[in-house]
Length: 183
Image 1 (cartoon, rainbow, N blue to C red):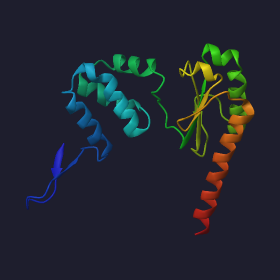
Image 2 (cartoon, rainbow, N blue to C red):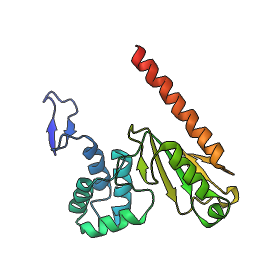
Image 3 (cartoon, rainbow, N blue to C red):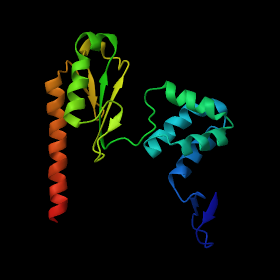
């Protein structure tokens, strides 16, 4: 990392060689854990939070800096559901497919949302507004079936209630877009 700034005693800001300041935040996380291999999960979480997804380049970067084989970094990243390898939408809908949710109709919610958003599970709409994904279990079995929209749990969900909630979010996005275009 190189320093930039004036020599008049003011604080210098760090600039990553890539020019992408997000790497500075990731480097801080790795430094906090002394670049230990045991920090892999925390570093991946920080990378996901900072970059929004884990790119191949980012996995190589983490592998090199923690001195962990790339296969191990990839193995951990693919094991945990919270990590994604493609940019996610501005909004997201996660449908639980655990046993309780499945028995109570989560597959119908997935089908409906896939049709409403015109995307398969695991993808993002072309305009980047919505991502649709599933989770093996969200730990809310008493509320089955469950979906999470933008971090908000929707218990006792139906295909219609989730489609309505997503429709309202999309309508709000259209209003914002219209306002931006108007002036």
